[in-house]
Length: 91
Image (cartoon, rainbow, N blue to C red; front, side, top):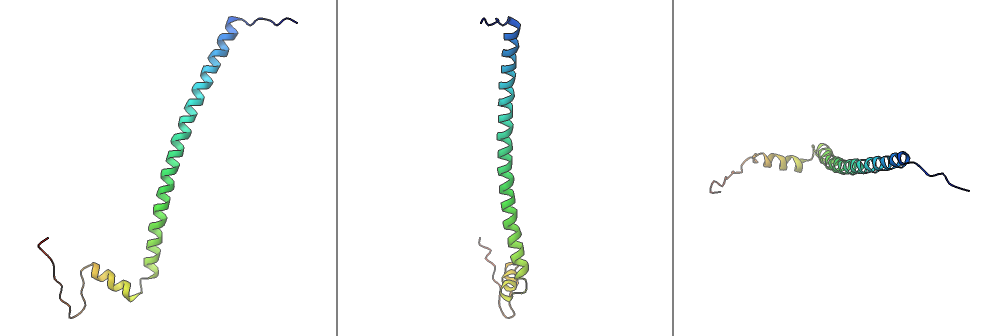
């Protein structure tokens, strides 16, 4: 059996297709990598937001707690009756 020789045009078409496929593959690889990086960044944002939500939920649940109310009031500069507030202006 003799195999028919392929023409120059056929070889050229195959080479062009291979180059196109390789270029497309590299482009898709870059897109996948950037999408994965974006997914990781978004996952980190979700985790941070979940922590913030948990802190807010805890604050809501403890809003009637006298110790929590006192701590928040002191952070805002309030004092108990009979206490004197001293402010350090020296720095």
